Image (cartoon, protein in one colour):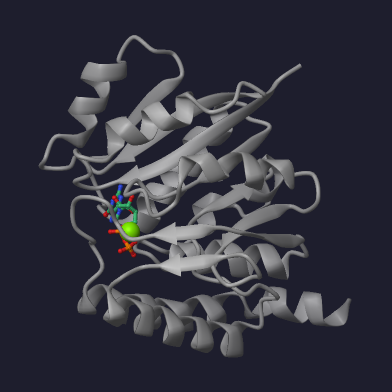
Length: 246
Ligand SMILES: Nc1nc2c(ncn2[C@@H]2O[C@H](COP(=O)(O)OP(=O)(O)O)[C@@H](O)[C@H]2O)c(=O)[nH]1
Ligand SMILES: [Mg+2]
C-alpha cells in the first residue's frame, strides 16, 4: 500500500509560485500518494482562487482559506489540524516560494521512519543556503546562534520550515495550546516536540532564493518572533523540568 503524504503549504500572495509548485509536487515519483493542502490567508493577489480554479476538481489538492488572524504561525497550526483530518502517514510542511524544492521531498520521506521529525537542513554536510540576499543570511546566522544557545535543541537548522512530521507528533503537540501567530511557530513546534522527547533527524537540502513574489518577513515581524521566543521558553518551562528529570 502506498503511503499517504499531505504537503501543507502556507501561502500569502504567492500567485506566481503556487501553481507550478503544486504541479511539481503532484508530478513526483509515484511511490507515495501526494495530497497538497494550501493554507491561504485570503491573499489579496487571489492565490486561493487561482488554486481553486486550476485544481478545484482534483481531489489531491485542497485549499483552506482563513479569514481571521492572519499569520504564518496561525495558518500553519490550522493547516496541521486540517492535515491530520486527512489521515496521512506523514505530513510535510514547506514554503510556497520554491526556497524548498519539491524534488527534495522524497529525500525527506526516505528517512521518515528513522525519526519523529525529519528536517530539511541547510547546515548539515551536503546542505546549501543559496539565499542571495546578504542581510537575510546574516539574520539567519544570528537567529540560529541565539536559538541554539538558548533552546539547546539538538538540530543545526532550527529555523527550517521544510519538515516532515509523523502525525503522532502533531497530535502530541496539542495544536490548540500553541500560541504563535507568526513565524515563531517553527521554533515553538520544534522546541515543544524536543521537550516531549521526540527524535529529530536532519537531511541536507539546497535552499534556493525565493523565485517570485516577495518575502513577508520584515523588522517588526522579526522583533515579534524574538519576543515570542522568550514567551514560548517561559511557557514550556514545566516540560523542560520533565525532560531534565529523565
Ligand atoms: N497563510 C499565510 N502564509 C504566510 C504568511 N506569511 C508568510 N506566509 C507563507 O509562509 C512561507 C514563508 O514566507 P516567506 O515570506 O517566504 O518568509 P521567508 O522565507 O522567511 O522570507 C511562504 O509560503 C509564505 O507565503 C501569512 O501571514 N499567512
Ligand atoms: Mg521564503
